[in-house]
Length: 352
Image 1 (tube, rainbow, N blue to C red):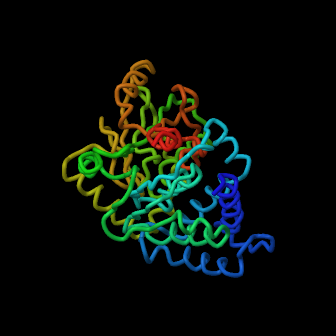
Image 2: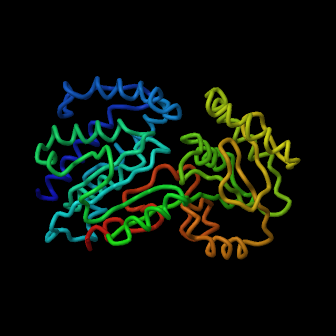
Image 3: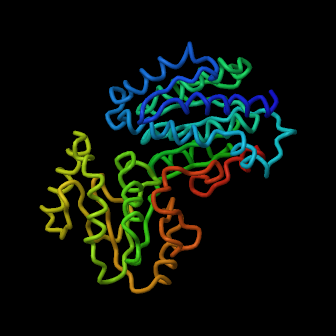
């Protein structure tokens, strides 16, 4: 298949996804295959929480809208402009996907196909339905894709290269099992925010989006704050109040109650607003409903710390306090060229 044909299919998929949002589903007559797929996808979004309790309709719709915005011809052209796949010989590329947030593996799926390779997909048990549906839509748009997309139920076999995402523990297994194949192995990562006290209310509300989107389950969710010594958290908590309804979700509330109780029984000092806790801690990975924080004396020490811990960090959020940081409220809307773990997936796929 020509790359232009595959790209066109993903543009059409973007048009399809653009019909579904938190504000409501709007059927657009010009979207291809709507009669077959529109109602079914609307129902799938509503049923997603029955498949995974964290996948509320609102969270799935946010993910869908993010991909609708990304899958435009301009974005795809800009992304692909630095690569040449004209001489690509299709290889079977295996994907072992995570399932912590809706469609978390879609970028890898897109990358393999857009680079001309065939994809073997092993989905997570926590996110089995959404990607399969989108693949079915793509095949309806471009039937030749049917031979390039395979979903694997059992052991992943017969692949030439692999991209696998998992915990630090499973990564060790992946590294051993795939040692003889070209691979990208992704481990646990967390995102941090660096504050200096000059942030506006709007900045801090954006930070709340970075913390609470997907209930904090993603590697791009902020789980750790760096704040100057003497930092007053009053404005931070005022902004977080915008997200108070998160406690209405039973799974989140259960985690809040449990983790708060564990902290208190351990005699940890907490700041609490009845739907989140913040705790002074040097770790990056905080439990659901909690954010860790750490004081700093100067930004140079924060820069040094983050540089030393690069392999643990996914995103850094700030008002340009740290080089290459992400703006507040933007962590869950990466561009196509914002690669997970800063590993260029298309460059990897161009060399297998």
